[in-house]
Length: 258
Image (cartoon, helix red, strand yellow):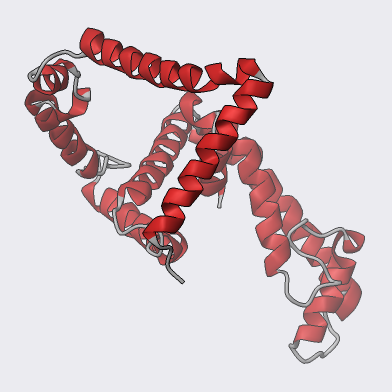
C-alpha cells in the first residue's frame, strides 16, 4: 500500500535524529557527507577539465577524416592500373608448341584442351568459374613440352635409332620368337587356337616371365600398373624439363605429372 505524507515526514525525522545521535556518539562520522560531496565535485571538475583541454573544436571530425590515408589500391590511378592488370591476367594467349608447323601445334592444342577439360575443369568449375587456374596449368604443360622439344632437337635421331632403338626392337622380337617356339613347338607346327590363354602362355615364357614393369601376369587388368609406371617415369623426367620456378611447388609438379 502507498505511504502517506505523515509517514514520510516521520521517517525523515527519525533518520535525522538517528544521524544526530550517531554523530554524538562517534564524532568522526560527521565528515562522511562532506567527503561524499567533495568527491562528487572533484569528479565533475576533473571531467570538465579533460573535456576542455582535449577538445579539438567543431571541425575536428572533418579534419581528422581528411588526414587518414586511404588504401593505395582505391586511388583512381592505381584502381585503373589494378583493373587493367586483372584483365591482362585473365587474357591468355596460347604459345604454339611447334611454331614451324601450324597443323602439329593445332593438334597438340586440341589434345591439351581435352586433357584440361576432362582432368582439371571437371572438378575446378565447382570452385571457380574463372579460367585462371586452367590457364596456368596449360602454360606449365606447354613449357614442359617446349623444353622436351628443344632437348629432342639437340639429339642425333639417326644415331639414336640405330644405336638404341633398333637393338631394343631386335632383342624384343628374338625373345618373343623363342617364347613362341617353346609354346607352339620348334617349328611352330602345333595347331593352337588363337586365344587369350595362348597369349598368356607365350608371355609366361617370354624372358622367363620377366615382363615389362607395366605388364604382369598376376593382374588381369594392368591399367593401374601402367599408370604407376608412367608416374615413375614422368617423376624422373619432369625435373629435367620443368622451369626452375615450377620445381619449388609440389602442387604444380603433381598437377603437371598427372
